Amino acid sequence: MTDLSIEQPATVGDRAKDSLRSQRTLPNGDIQDLTPSKLARGLREAGALVRAPHRVLPLIHKLASDMLHLTFARPHLYSYSTTKRSSGEALDRLLRWIYKAERPDGGIAAYYSLLSGYSRSYPEVTGYIIPTLYEYAKTAGDRRAVHIAERTTQWLLSVQTREGAFPAGLHGSEARPSVFNTGQILHGLVRAYRESHDLQILNSAIAAGDWLIGMQQADGSWSGLGAYQGTTHTYYSMVAWALAPLSNLVDDRDTRENYGAAAERNIDWVLPHFRPDGWIDGINLRGHPTYLHFIAYALQGVLECGVLRGRSDAIDAVKKPAWVLLRRFETTKFLPGAFEGDFKTGHRFTCLTGNAQMSCVWLRLYEVTGDLRFLSAALKMNEMLKELLTVRGGKGIAGGVSGSFPIWGPYQPMRYISWGCKFFADALLLEQRIAGSLPALESEALPCAS
Image 1: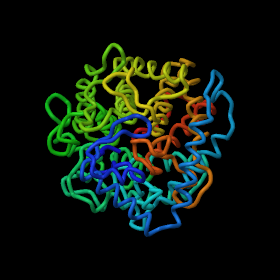
Image 2 (image 1 turned 60 degrees about the horizontal axis):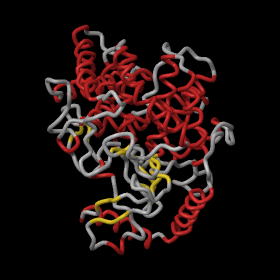
Image 3 (image 1 turned 180 degrees about the vertical axis):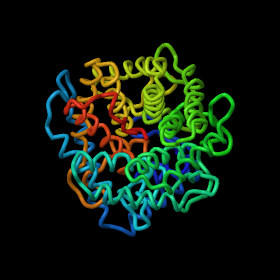
């Protein structure tokens, strides 16, 4: 998920009464701007609750559940070192949430809101859920995942522009092309072609790749038209990761080199933004804190591109921030959901999506380096996420991953989000792959940030 200005609501509920104030303190002590547009979105969601009173009890139940957990849970030295729920059971619940999030048009909803229900289809997330669906089908033998992947792929082909780009935002909200969303969807198109060998899908992937190369700046970054807020972002390393495997699908040697070279140009631009202390500059979310979700994006894109392109410098660069975050999690049993300019100043909520992505990063670093400390941290993180997985509730709730913990935190408040389910599923699939002693570098990496 990238476009926070479109997707991020004002936190609602008790904040509606403060609608005349431009800024207020959140329950966790953070400050969030309540601009008129954010307030309008928040009030619309709150208004939807009036029209759907059946959502009131689930909302109250979730708020009370998270409050009780915050009040009585006391992580200690041995927290998350034992399994309380099997990974297979958790994985099945996550995928069933995704199945139910498929919309009539064939796309996947961005979220289920406790206030307003399901959103419209979201092309970006629909695209990068496709590899997860195929991987789950292979692991669990569930053909339903394949059927949904095939339907969502066909829907994506229908919303691609003539130039090869894919739009920002929810389906039908706007036609503005998005570099990041196009790269994320490219992950799904590449996997869909590998599974189906459908030339229409390959042509769509090539068109997307060509558009991305055409939009790339000479220094390897993406900015201007099609970039979020018009500026450069180091987490666009995810786009580079999408281009790297595309080079393996085309027969023409020059075309292959174009995609690979474009991926490496972006990595060359990103790497100088990695500080010696582990912090990553250039994420650039104006008006928002630096969410862990986007830090993990930067790490995943650089790491996976490094593996695919044989770039040991890229892999080595990821180790430092991954280690800093590992040590913070191991010592406090908590990762802040957002940071302010360094890893020392963290916000007091948890971004569950970012946690799941960090599990993916640690598991992949274990596969690449053999360092058991990365594996240990990832397994503990998975146990923590399993404890916070919603197991009871109706459609849109059971098996869902909330944007924040507690659910009223500032990242996607009051929502269960599809990309949270996707990333956590990827982490559990990687865990199962490692537990099964599958070859590490010969296997295809899951686009878990994707």
